[in-house]
Image (cartoon, rainbow, N blue to C red; front, side, top):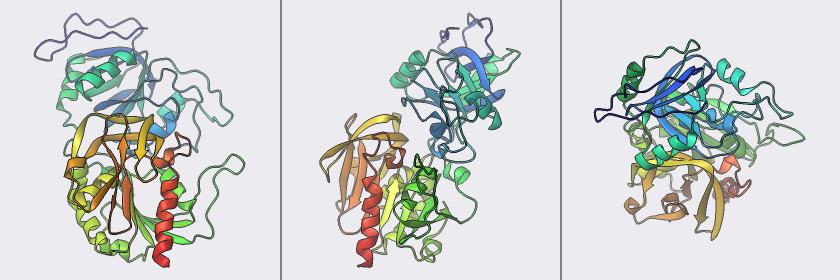
Length: 401
């Protein structure tokens, strides 16, 4: 089945000439009135969210379980998604926060020795809906040219849809500007983490003799970030996003980590910025931030953040590190960015995107504090960016000296 796109009236209403193809059991309706037909996958139902695209060729299970995708429906530009199946290990959180997926081709039988079930069964187990058969090239160009739209994805096995009602649901979605989603994905209580990164021969092992203690503020932390910290010899205490500086310092950490997460950093910053500002008063305390944590740190330092036209989402983004003069191939997932012209004088820009020259990293000139916009734990290089976790470890070691 080929995806069909409607024409759109000046009022944004769905064109009456829009025809449903035979066999269509799912549909994506944008707030503008554009319609993409396809076949349903996963759980029957409807979901409303911002529609974005990710250019990664692999890692779809990690992408779908990344808490940073809360409030979003993911369009995969690579056509063959689901071909290696799913397992219980390649997840970034137990409960996915993404609201659905859009695929080009039907999924095939799993072809990987680690697979325990196919993508369809995995989606059903998490009550997630997806649509296949969509011309993702058309949809990706639409997002590229016009920015990420609001949309409603619907899967009904009987093929019955009220397109105007779906369009209205999409139009009524408030969007991610001003939305604090970290509070929806953060942990409910403080916990400990000691699982290290996966290895071929041993799987996941624990760090039983940690040298350092890190408190990780969970704005929507990915498990592989926590594993990367443990693999550097760290005992990790995970605290909720609304933890105060006093609560964090009561754990007597060697360093503090600010995690990734979804939503508008300025909205999350209403409670996170005062916490970070108080931590910065501890002039020798190492602080490391990733993604939303990078943006929260920048806001606490006096910089600004802003919504991007379409964001960075994929595993092929080149970033230059001015501190090493090297280029890394990075994994990224963010729709907001730090406005580099707003950085104060005591903050140095350390990384930039070679796609669009946007800010990708900062550090303070007078204390052991730094952050990056991209995801060094995601291994697209595959090991290009792991040095950042060692850099954090070295700062904690220097503090002890």
